[in-house]
Image (cartoon, rainbow, N blue to C red; front, side):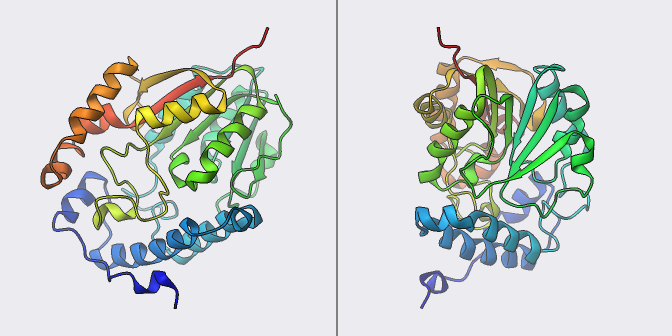
Length: 303
């Protein structure tokens, strides 16, 4: 018998409605359970997969199954409170446009619906989207200066030193931990010397942030690993990136930067909050502003 089938039946947290209201999720409890049961099964398969299975296309298979099986999945539904708003899209685009110009080649990692790339494309030489699933790609994307490149999860079928700016939003946490450093090294390879990588991912300290937020204290869904400032900075450096800088950008509002030591101190303070108070303190607007991880790092220019 599949060991995933032996997992105990899910039980919604007592404060799940509070969490749902914080995230604007209006789905009924029974729909959250359906989502969780499916995602937990798929995540269990991913966590126990081999490198060969993932390289053969497991990421695309699982995410196609997840999105296509749930008509009310947050990435699919257009109802208020689920799909990213136009304002959120505009803020993401504004973050990118302040750093790029007409000569840049922009790469959006995991931007499957191409919305960010389509908005950035008129302002750059070319916009490219890499994702494991093409289920959300607009039919006319390639006619609007946007190229879609499908990946099996780690590999990126682009030449070395071919893009000048990389953006990923809520992607890193979906990678199997064994693949995270491998993908960073692929991104480092395709990035031109002097190019920048802007990465956004949820904080482990305020999590979990996948569907298991309504059930568990740690991520058990498709968030394979949630990071901290310290752990993400470490693997960025291991991949070759330099000068990682913490950016304060809640909901893509770019406010400013934060010294590394201050970010680490905040994580220690919020990490000490008892689980009984976690939802009310670590998921508060203040905490999400300070803990939502946005880091920009560079590929060095070698002499």
